[in-house]
Amino acid sequence: MKTALITGITGQDGAYLAKLLLSKEYKVYGMLSRRVNQSYQNLDFLGVKGVNFVYADLTDQCSIQNVIKSVMPDEIYNLGAMSFVGLSWDKPAYTSQVNGIGVLYMLEAIKNFCPEARFYQASTSEMYGNCKGSEAKNELTPFIPRSPYGVAKVFAHNMVVNYRESYGMFACCGILFNHESPIRGPEFVTRKISSGVAEIKAGKRDIIQLGNIKAQRDWGYAADYVEAMWLMLQQEIPEDYVIATGRTHSVEVFLQKAFAAAGLQYSPEYIYQDPKFMRPAELDVLLGDSTKAEKKLGWKPNTSFEELVNLMVQADIERLK
Image (cartoon, rainbow, N blue to C red):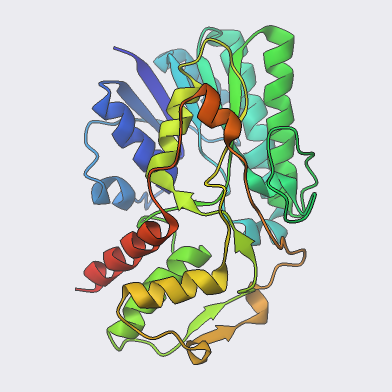
């Protein structure tokens, strides 16, 4: 039986990945920080049972070392992060510590105490910024981040590459484009839309407050994307991969599809573009090219954009019931 350690176990990706690994008969450890009000709602929503919880924090090097030494995992998936891009401008130092230095702490602990472990780092399409505009981004596209979140993730990504090349570690990065699900955090735009539409349908609200609705993103389904994470650690040689659908849609199109999924007619009157949700430096288009993952991992997304939107809206309608 393989043993896996997942940081960020209670987040969207952590919950889906835990479910996948448990179905493959892994012994799964989930790393938690010691919070008074720890939420397990994502794991509960997916019916995930059998996770072993351990306690450490990505800002505390000693606690990370202790967890690595006690668990001695075969595979480590670092999904823990300050993951809301908009908040990174308000908390740039904390974002850098968790998303950047925290990864360095993980790599050091693996190198010193568990060097045979295979390590996955959650990189992000935000690292590309507006490089090459609307062109599809692949593993060779330069990184020009436009947020503290993206900058910290570039540091972490490059550090993984450096440790892989310097120490022969099996360490790789998944450069995942936007991926959503019914358990996406309520602060993210896609979930704000799905929950907002559900509440409009139920007569509980009249408008949805959003930022830039013209921004375009390559949206996939989180359950599909965690499969790619697992596949990366099953290869003979560690490499980095872009994971994306190769299709892009604007926030406004997401809105239109969400209203349709709820059986409602979309109207701009339902939307208030609040200045507080506008980014200081916007990314206009993010589009990914996952040709390498398709060829080497045999991975393709199984869920269409329309199916994803419908899943999210129907789940939020059910929650209100």
